[in-house]
Length: 442
Image 1 (spheres, helix red, strand yellow):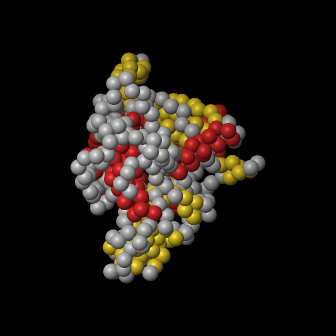
Image 2 (tube, rainbow, N blue to C red):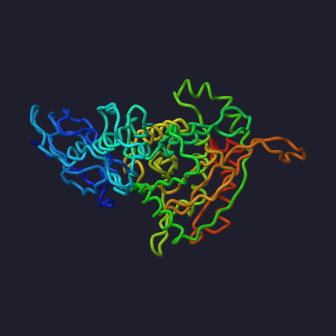
Image 3 (cartoon, rainbow, N blue to C red):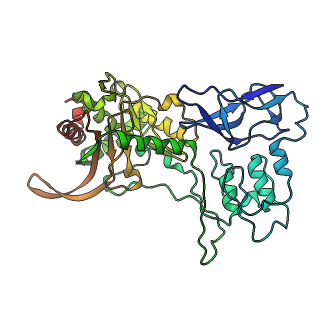
């Protein structure tokens, strides 16, 4: 026998929530195979098997709070019989449905099935978790008809609860994890970047005149995001300054060299890498924007670690590009693409998101015209990119149509004065409107 233990958490994480079991008692397991996933307030951790064998017992259920190195279950040698009655197995074997108001394993109230639970046996799938199997069995659901929104295409508890409640729409994960540079509109048309398609909703219509509601508990990551953002608003003296950038020079640069860039580096040249380089040069000129507050001290950082805000199915995550002053445009694009893939697959680590001296977020990916982003503490500033729109502007005494983008800098007024914030944003504007400045570092 070998215990399955919770991975050791970092010092800043005290506990987690058991998110998903990928195996059930009696299933064979192989060394290195993912058995379960644990959600902390920062990342989702995978629990892997340390030996070949059979999952003989489960000590913790999906939704349970777990501590570092706590035992989740046991793996025995091949041929070992599972425990006579684990909590998961007992719940799955019950034939009668829950009474009105009874809660499922995820804490969401399961309403009585108005159509009863009689009928044909539901189709079974090997990748169903114990909690999902319980709901499927009780409600007579067909797993093949339940829209799956899990990180690997598996059915989550929320999916099953939604299906059991009559098809209330549940917004599942999408490819929104791709950052701006992966989804920008090509060419110089100034059209909005293509947004991701809306998630597929359950097909069962809501009854006429019904006023349905659904209560879903916040995930740990979402709760942590809410806590951190509110703390920033309560602590920092937030102020936002705006400017606009003529993106035609940057778009012309991409159009002229895109094919050569892709042929040499194997990745597309996006706007995000240009903004990262422009921001790095501006941070070099205005060090206080790259600083942070610690009590009554100001910490000036002699390095440039820029976080790229990415929307994932689990909430906003900000992986860090480290030492951006030493990165090429191709290196930035490759790192962003790697982070986008890891975010989609739930593979971002705490190391990927720790630290950072400045952040960039791109609401333009989703069509945002203008916004006031909130800084990512303990950082003191964040740059907001927005949608590119063709607008008439005055240029050399003539009215011309140009692809324009509003940019915003939110900053902590406790240490950054308005003059420095405005000049910082003007520096970024000047670099993007004359990209040769990046080469000359002027």
